[in-house]
Length: 235
Image (cartoon, rainbow, N blue to C red; front, side):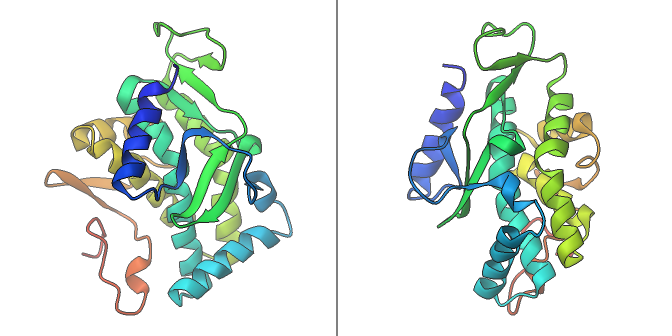
């Protein structure tokens, strides 16, 4: 009931994409094999994380720092999308803590889910105080705290291990808010949310026509024969 609108929306996206979606529509992991605790990936010696980077490098014939950026573009997108859509659809934001997040390789690059999800809601929400919710005065601030808790360990590890810039990686997270929100309304709404969240995602996108353009590059364009993304800063 808390996240029915979000789950229905994600089910629709999965159907449109032939079942290829990098987040489970219900967000909570099933009991199928192959799930990897996200927290284990960002603990030294980072063997699991480096294995995912190297698999990405092999798939795209990419140097390691480019592979790290592309891996993050995938993981960061699917981890961020539920927060963005939850905010956009009804101001109910699902938060997947690092210790609760699970990931596995999939046709979508990776699929993200969680062993449990907490939903941030505003005080006036009819379901405030319901089981599984946390009432917050500021959803953008709650999202910002969630990014630092659940995404920054990945950003820091990937940057340290492969020398890809942290700002480059956060640019992909910023886009992961704007891209799904643009399907619900104008870019102005996404821009407002990013500004309210603040660092590390504010200021990394700029308006461009009816959409936006990145101020950082995801590094896809550096691959052999690759065309720049439609939102690329070098387009």
